[in-house]
Length: 476
Image 1 (cartoon, rainbow, N blue to C red):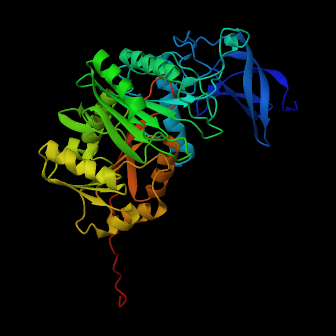
Image 2 (spheres, helix red, strand yellow):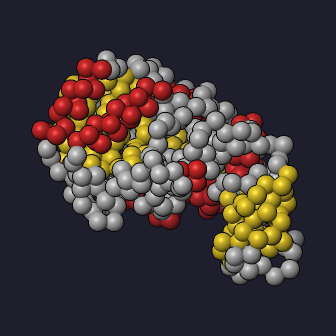
């Protein structure tokens, strides 16, 4: 059967591919179907056709999969925030485990890896401690809004339609953040509407209001409100800050980040404080962390504790080990492990993260961690003492090839590899498999209703066996 772009065909979905799309096959060709579940029978329209695969969008579901559930969110299927709400959560966990296994086998070329069942998130809704909402001068209408004359196509503040920068839903409520966040969002929406101050145009790059970022402390139930604008104007913003502080005692920090850059990133070129403190505090285990508006912190606090506990278990520290923590960020893993190690050295290339890590050590009265600022491929050779354990927690892109080379040269006895991307984790494990045995992998679900998955891999250096020399008596 010849597949053509624009064609509508009947498909039986057989699997879910990494990336979250349903997988069907037509005469051996892979067809990836957005929003489809295994065992769905659908009519789907081909929207992209390549030599070896095609992409399709569902026109109608003829026979729904038994794995399907009714998603509780009104934006499900339109919002790019959590695209797996239509899947039963237990099935999500199974698919994530399988994606880790498939990546290790097919990319890393490591056969029959020991990959445990995915540890579920403690909460599957209201689990995110940070949300970013984009302001737009034109909102993206849902299908049932298209013909309603009382629905204006103007201002929106909310989340993006998948894979777009310019299509913003006017999000009334997001189920991934605690409920109070949605009340704050609604008050900010109403204030912006009534302010008569122009909203930033994603095409024109003209306007004042750009983003709203909300941070929540799971440990202390406190909130930070970060309003991102294109210029500084306290006359406009201070009444909003005062309104929110008076209405919500849970808000302890309101800041304004200002950026004139065109990039759609909710980070200011500088920051001013409008009300309350400059940061909020949260805890992972017994460790407390100060979180500023632009600092990195795991977005699922309770999930982060489960992840770090797995790292601690795999590291198997007795209190006498020297540990090197690559891509140490704000020092969260180093600080969490500090009471189990003799010394920990973290290496991180972002200067502000190193400063945060040092401050977090002081706050937690930790004296056996130190942090090196610089590119890991340049700084790692400067670590002269051989570590007993190396923690590697790289960004989504994985390790640089020069970092891999230095890790193999240093050759610690044990490696604990933490990853948010099974594909690049598998690639990196494949690069070191000649010298290290992959003992086990534990997936940890930090992002319910998305295809994303964190994994912790435990590796041990292979023992070198010396073959005994056989001496022959040449004079015999």
